[in-house]
Image 1 (cartoon, rainbow, N blue to C red):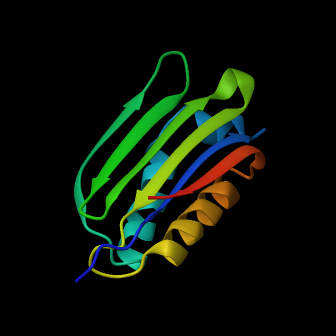
Image 2: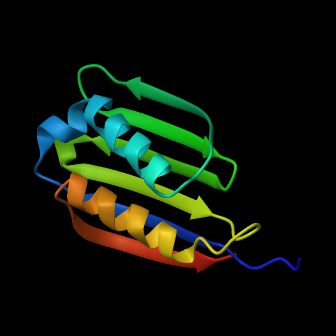
Length: 117
């Protein structure tokens, strides 16, 4: 099998949904569902709530990773989603994950870069 580049989306979002940016619990439930729906393999994860608010999440997947950092005081969300295409094409899956997270945070896109690597 030859190597096919994967899709890597790095984005800065803005959301007025402060409650969703404060702590990771609701986001984790969404990510767990997305990982299951898209038949990805979770190898490990770290979630951390900051005081007084905001969270960070890193989900290590056999296909690569998802990371999220929030700053509720600024309405800011940073996303980093990369899936390789080693065993199957995941290009559409990356886009579906990104779209689902934008919907979850009810976010507008400040900046988005897509890299094929």
